Image 1 (cartoon, rainbow, N blue to C red):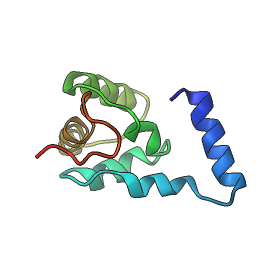
Image 2 (image 1 turned 120 degrees about the horizontal axis):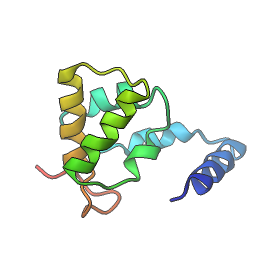
Image 3 (image 1 turned 60 degrees about the vertical axis):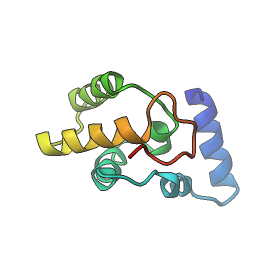
Image 4 (image 1 turned 90 degrees about the horizontal axis):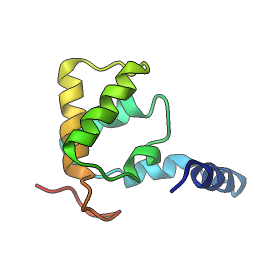
Length: 101
């Protein structure tokens, strides 16, 4: 989904009286979820992340980029977020599927 479509969706939900935090309820369960929610929700809606699918290497690059832009994660938190994203949102997982075990 393009950024413009995400912004339009968020605006439509706001106008309809619905909160975009409803997307947070769709965050997949798994180890590292709490760290992901706590840190990644600081700068953007979680749906910005949870609608994406990437390989472990791609998630590593994305998290590194976020840290260069101000995301503050300890090394343990970075590892937890990467483990979570890699298992919960791999490239071959359709939206709404549970994370791989």
